[in-house]
Amino acid sequence: MKAELILSTIASRRTTRFYLNTPVPKELVDKVLEAARSAPSAHNSQPWVFYLIETPAVRLKLVDEMVDEWDRAMRTDGRPRELIEKTKLKFTHRFSKAPVLIVACVNHGALYYERYADIHRKTLEGILGHHSLAAAIENMLLAAHALGLGSCWYSAPLFCSERVKKALGIKGELEPAALITMGYPSKREHKDKLLRPSEQVVIRV
Image (cartoon, one colour):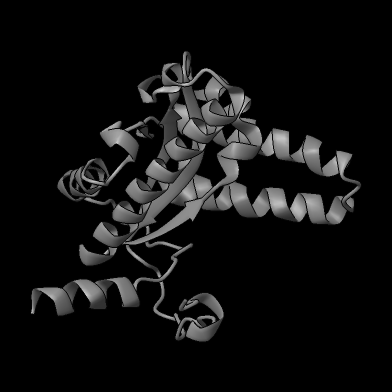
């Protein structure tokens, strides 16, 4: 029964981008963060730090910094102004209105760069940090789903990490790598998830 419950939770989880204007109890948020801490990691380094954004002024500064950087980047890419404004409005709304907002960082200070003499393996060690953080985030998404919450994993901070650091006062060896929104889903419209056929993704040798 336990195995069936776990597999059912994995299979039924869906991304949620829109939430009810209902606060999420602190104890549920704490359980989600505890699930993140329980994730596997390279060398058991646990190279993660999570910023739980609770202060409205900090959230506003974070969203403003991110959106401003995206505006600059999209103009550099030559995107149409109408598309730029639409994108900015979309993400400003999503990140401003989500009941729970968490920024997930790779803690490079927890990794073992000093073990390696060459740049190639040092680079791979950094990638292991991102692998480890991804495992922690997946734990968060599954825990949220099991607790009746919806969530969404955005990789947006990777594209504006210096601005995120500025907004949150992050210093040292932390790299903002992901942003997770969470709350009670506002609508139950999720269709069956379209998965690529097993024969395309599983190679038996």
